[in-house]
Figure (tube, rainbow, N blue to C red):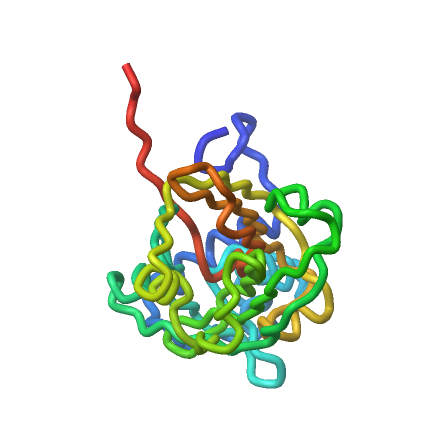
Length: 243
């Protein structure tokens, strides 16, 4: 494969149309409208269904954004978030973006067996669940749910503003130190509830990240489940050889 084209040189019609649309939007600014499907179909001499498939893939890839009742527009570049033990607030501010959160859940509940095993607490022991929609410049990017052992953080529910930076509060008020974390990333689809909170289509692929953080003594600090919009955010990390 070279630039997506097989060696035999034959490509599906929608892929050729996709390349033509990419070439066209390269000259348009962010937020510019894309010509209607019927106009593109006439220009490229293909069926509207072919244009629709090409546009659908570009929406999934985050190159275009579809707004129901309004049309399709050139999407802004994806936000690239570093994979590191740094708060969402600090990471976005370092990139010149304005972070904010919408609090969905902030309450105590019993841990199920799987969560209890990860946090190394007894099954049904109380945990604090903090679920928030993460935004950048007002745009929903992810849905983050943090679980913390309630016994270790007895003042959290009464003393923490759930719209603020949890990491900063825990560091400054409780002296918590993040030493290491295990993080797993995989693709997933959002549930109807999650898609509604993230203002996205349930059919679009999401990035599911699950992290277990530990302090210097090896004791679990938190379990975090984050669901990110794959069309609006990407992640990067720096790999260093241990040789």
